[in-house]
Image: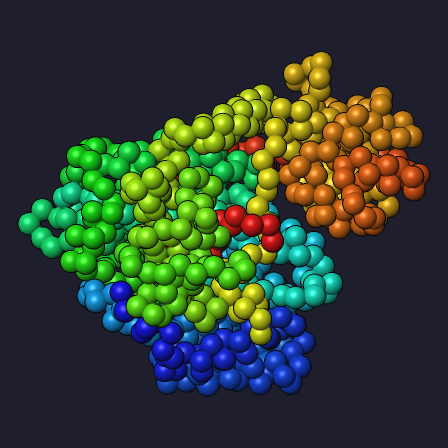
Length: 459
Length: 165
Ligand SMILES: [Zn+2]
C-alpha cells in the first residue's frame, strides 16, 4: 500500500466539510427560531449544492428553515444536501484509497428504485426527527427524546425496516443520556448531524431497496468487523470471493440483531452465531463454498446457510498476500456514499510500529498511518499484540480528517514462530481460557433474560 | 473544532460493563431516576420495581402487582440496595453519581447508599412502578426480535470501544 498518498491533501474536501459544519451549527441551536448566524449557515449549505440537481429544492428549504417555517419536506432536503456533500467527500476519499491500494473499483450501474408510498410507521419517525431539528441539540429534553420510543418499538419487529430502527434506537439513546441539551458542555455535532440526516433519508420510500443477484464460488474470509450500540450488534465478515469462472472481488457478509443492553462481549457472538455459519468458518480458518448465494450490487452477501457449505482450511494471511491484490472492489450505492462506510481491506507488512502515549502508528515506507486498536472487540487480538506485530490484515477507514487502519488480524513472532491473532477469534465460539469464561458469563446472562421474558412477557 | 466534535464515530456513551443478572435483571438511568427490577428471593413469579429520583433521592419499591414493599418503610430496602450496587457495576460509579446528583470523592456503591440516606429522602408513592415495569418488558422483548443477514450500513456509526468514554 502507498501510505504516502493517504496524508496528501484532497481537493474540495475542506469546502464540503465547512458547508456541513454550517448546517451542524444550525442544528446545534435548533431551527425553531433561527438567528442570523444560522440563516447564514443554511445559505452556505444551499450554496454548496446549488449546482447539483438538488440545488433549487435545497435553496427553498434553507429559506424556509431560516424563517423558522421549515416543514418535514424541507428538513428532508437539508438532510439530502448534507448527505450529497458527504457523497462527494466519500468519492474523493475512495479515489485516493484506490490509488494507494492499486485496486480497481467497479462502476455503479443499478438504476434508481421506484419510490413507493411511505408507510405510516416511517412517517412517525420523520415527524420526530423534524421536532428534534426544531429543538436543536441544545434544546433536547426528556419529553422530546422519549417521543422516539414508541416509534422505535413499532419499527423494530420488521426486518425490512431494521436499518431505520437500529439507527434511531442508537441515536435516541445517546440523546436521552445527554438531556437536557442546555447543560451539555460539548456536542458531537458532526456525529449527530450524520445520524439525524441518515435517519431522515431512510424515511424516503425506496431508499433501502437493493436489487439482488446470486453468486457461486469460493469464499475466502479475511476477518470480522463488529459494530454495536447498547441495543443492537452487527458482525460483518470481509472476504474475497472467487466466483466460478470469474475474477475475484471483495464481498461482505453481515448478521445483526437487536439485543438488551446487558448482552455484551461474548454474549453478542452468542446472539449472532446461530444465524450465520460463516462466523464458525472464520473462527476455524476455513473457506466456504457458495452456491447461488444472494448478493447486492455493493458486494453484500445476503447470507442464507442453505447456500453455503464449509470448505477447505484457508489462512486469511495467505488470502491477504496472494488473492487480495488481485481482487476488485464493488461500488457503493449512491445513498450510502459516506466516509464512515469506507472500510477497505488492506494487507500491511514491513512496517515500523511506534507507540507514543496511547497513539499507535505504523510507519509504512516511512509514512505514518494511525492504528485504531480501540475498535477491536474483546478477544485474543489485544492492542499490545498489534503494537508488537509484523504483519496486519486491516480495514482502512477515514474519520475526523485522517485515514486509520483498524486491525482485523496480526501476525506476531513468539519463540521464533509466527502466531496469528484474529479480532473475530471468538465469533464462532471461544476456545481459549479467557474466552470460555466470558462465554459462560454471557450464557448465564442470556438464560436469566430468556427465563424472565418467558415468564413475564406473555402475561 | 476538536477531533471529537468533528468525528462521525465520536464515542458518546460508554459501553455497559458485564454483571450477573439473576438478582437484578434490569437497571437503567432514565426518566430522571435510577430505576429497575429486582427478582424476589422467595417467589419466582414476583419481582420488585424499585427507583430513586435524581436530586431528591425520593425512593419507591413495590411488587409488579403494585403491593408496597415491606422493607421500604421510611428507609431504603434491600431491593434498592441491590439496585444501587448493580447500577454501579453496569454503568460505573461516576455515571450513576452524576445522574443522581450525588457529590463526593472516592465514591463506591456503599458510599452512594449512605450519602443518599443521610439526606433523609422521602418515600414516593408507587405511581412510577407501572411505567418502570413496562420499560422492563420492552427491554426483555429485545431478546425475541428476529436477527437479519441484510446489512445495516448505519451501524458503521457504532464501532465497539475498548476504553471507557
Ligand atoms: Zn423493596
